[in-house]
Amino acid sequence: MVYGYDEDFLSYLKIKFAINSEQFPLVSREKHRRDSIIKVGKVQFGGGCNFPIIAGPCGLKSEKDSIQTAIELKGLGVDVFRGFIWKGRTNPSSFQGVGETGINWLRKVKEQTNLPIDTEILSENHLKLIKDIVDVIQIGARNMQNYELLKAVGSVKIPVILKNGPGAGIDELLCAAEYIARGGNKDIILCLRGTKSLAGSGSRFTLDMSGFAILKRLTHLPVIGDPTHPADHNAIIPSVAMGIAACGADGLLIEVYNKPEMALTDKKQLIDYSQFAKTMHFINGILATIGKKNG
Ligand code: PEP
Ligand code: MN
Image 1: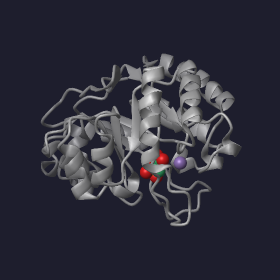
Image 2: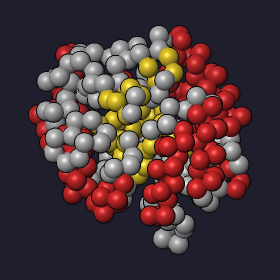
Image 3: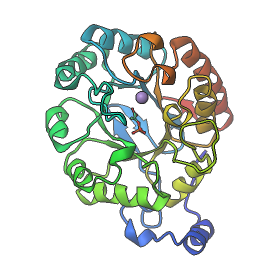
Image 4: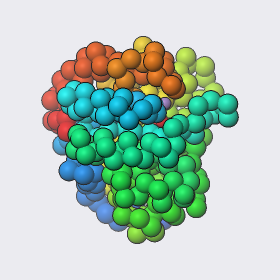
């Protein structure tokens, strides 16, 4: 499933929603019609044929647990390990992540599993601390418009996952990506993770499934989806993950942990290994139908 340049649809977006692609020329599909392929270690994002999986717990707990979890997730087909040591929390009293202590754990996970590592940074100082270790840097939803942080990640040569802000429009997400690209770093992967909605739907954020097909026409960058944060409860997450695959996204970012009840954060948002394996079974069927494969 490959989304290409579509002049008619782009002019519809310009007229109907006043989306001005001149604000984001470096990431716009108008100037760069072919899909960009972004490499995270040896894993490829974009191009329309593959669907890599980034997975791991919400936050890391200990060195031993991180290594064990990464080994098990690799066995379940995960391509990139999500190892978060800093957690930006809504409630200032909530656990904020293990912090700098976890940097060495990430190094060890990488040595022992050979999996590329994804971690979220909340500041320029975090970037300095992890820039020689991680394979992809995540900019979380709440930092999508932290322009100084965007410029900082724009100045390094490490791929970046940029999530949409909970109240941001699709053009604002692309302008945020443009900030990174203008610093010289073109290795950007966009991630849709839902927005606040006026309607009480029973989910924490609303993930607009049409967003994948729209964004893929506006930009040449890969677009992945996060089912964990919009769905918010493990009863709903597998269905949203399948929807993301079916909509033609370029990959999945999902929270998975062996014993969700023992996690330090977001216990209800974590799916366990058996739920993950079942979800991947269905996703692989969907991918085969649309001419893609996992990895
Ligand atoms: C996360 O991926 O752990 C996270 C906090 O997501 P978001 O920035 O989308 O809320
Ligand atoms: Mn989480």
